[in-house]
Each structure stands twice: as structure tokens, then as C-alpha cells.
Amino acid sequence: MPQAPDPLPTPAEGGFYPMVFPIDTDPDNYHYSDTWGACRSGCNRGHLGVDILTNGVKGYPVVAVADGTITWTADPCCALAISHDDGWKSYYIHLNNDTQNPDGSYSDDGAQWYLPGIYDGAHIERGQVIGLVGDSGNAEWVTPHLHFELWAPVDLDADNWRDTHQAINPTPHAAAVDGIPLDPEEGERPCAPGVCAPFGLVELAVEQKGATVDQFRLEPIRLQLRGNRRLLQGVLRITCL
Ligand SMILES: [Zn+2]
Image 1 (tube, protein in one colour):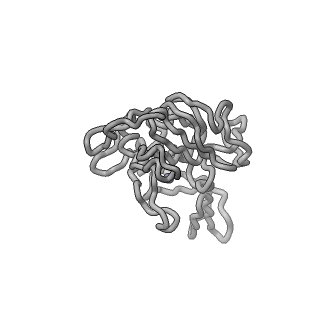
Image 2 (spheres, protein in one colour; image 1 turned 90 degrees about the horizontal axis):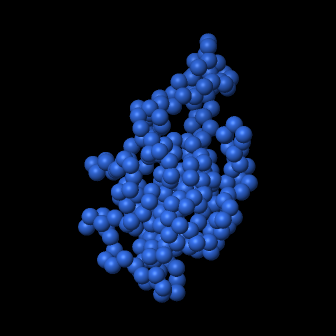
């Protein structure tokens, strides 16, 4: 039976869980903020993890933060949990399930998500690729991101899995191993200027000669622009302010 670290490291005590960052790519390619406990599903539940956004890009490698065994995989798609050898647990949600096209884009076909060697019961090493950043599950039509959770062991002998572990705010632990740590004042790990659109203000520019936009409707991912009583086939440019 794996033993929990004693005492549990807590950020308040200056301790951080010894992990690697769950996405293996240049720090310029992602950003996140501390949304622990934030409203989800109409405030029927609080956010139990950290959402690491990848500037609209799918496919960055998601890696195991510690050695462990895959003890849960979502059916039919596309998430998994790793029970660490030290008794902790981590969850990785919204893994990519879309086929990559030859030009690098993704088809949104939801065809498959398991990488070779990734299955329920597989032992995984810290830093091993377990999936790719995607928009599966309830992130479909939302920007690609990894929802990452970190659960501390409470009573590993408990019968109910809900009693064996307790979710903790993973944000400061992830930030501790990130190349660009969280801003302690803002609780944000900002994106690199000009390369992405964070939540909030965006600047829209439509390029179409002889037309003006007099109405727009923002849907979960599709932006429809109408001008001169017709749908504009413009270029949408989103700039980080
Ligand atoms: Zn999330």
C-alpha cells in the first residue's frame, strides 16, 4: 500500500507537491488562472481543478505529473486518472479525441483518444505522455484546454473512492513547477502578450471591402458577422490586449 507523504505539503506552509507540469510545451503556449471553487454548471458545483488554456491550439503533449497507475478512464471519452505510487491522485480531462489532418489542423471527428500504451491499469512514469490537449467532453466548442486536478490522500483504505482522497487547489502546485509562475497579486499566470486571447477584452477586426459590421452574435465558438443584410465572410482577428 503506497504511503502518503507526511506531512502533506501545503502552499500555505511553503510546501509544494513534487510534480512536473502537466503539459509538455514551451510556457509561451499556455496560460491559466486560479479558478479553484469557481462556479460551474450554473453554480451547481465548484471548480475542482485548474484549466490550462493553450491559445486555441490542440495537440500539445499532456504528461503524467508523477509515477503511478491509470486507475480510471472516462467512457466513452476522453479523460483519465492516475493513482500515484505515493498515494496521491491526478485527473486529466478534455484530452484530444480528434484526428489530425496532414496540414496540422484537427477534424473534430471525435474518432479516438487513446494513445498507444495508455489504458486502464497501465503503469505510467512521471513525464510520460498520456494524451494530447483537446476540447473533448463538455469542452467541445470551447477553447482547447487541460482541466487538471490534484487529489491528496485522506484514507486509502476507505471503501468509497470519494473518501480515499480529497481534491486540493492544484494551481499553486502547478505554478511552482511552471517556467513562468503565477502572479501572487492577480492569481493569474498570464499569456505572452499578443499571442493569445485571455478571457475578457478582445479586439475584433473584419476585413471585407465595402462592408461594415452592424451586428454580431457570439456563439460558443462560431462568430457570425452580418453587414449589408448578409453574412460576411471576413477574417476574424483576435488580439490579446
Ligand atoms: Zn476545468
